[in-house]
Amino acid sequence: MPTPIENHDIEGCFVCGARNPSGMHIAFRPTGPGAVEAAAHLDAAWTGWRGLAHGGLVATMLDEALGQAVATLGRTALTGRLEVRYLVPVPPDQDLLIRARVLRHDRRVADAESEALLPDGRVVARAHAAMFLCDVLPRPPVGAGT
Image (cartoon, rainbow, N blue to C red; front, top):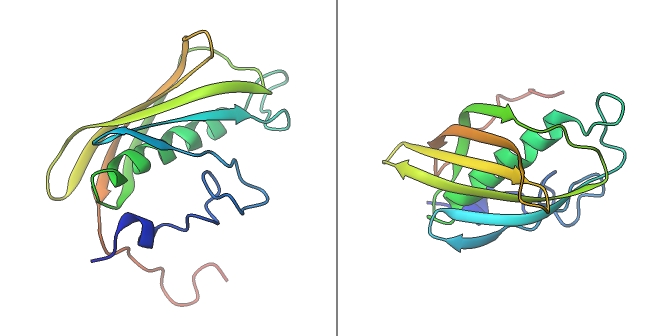
């Protein structure tokens, strides 16, 4: 059975890949079993509405944190359902702290939550997800994406 590291494109991942030239380059660190955190920066170019960081990119950070939290338990997870609540508008060119933790899990599904915080501790967004545990990743059909 492959480990989460073997299943993940650690170098090329858009969120955490150190060698992805277009990526976010977020380095998650475990803070306990089923929990991670990371310092993140919303690039000045990642805008949506004028003067606001794009919420989809905040959601992307929160989603990756959820998978990373599950990985600390030695499992690979794919997001089955993701609900994001935006609490505070965030300007681009802003530092964030991203945290995630697994609330509970069984053989097939993990229930997890993540949040993004400003340096002053205000929570800007929270996510809750059902993560499908799948140690062997499904493969796209031949010819998909071409």
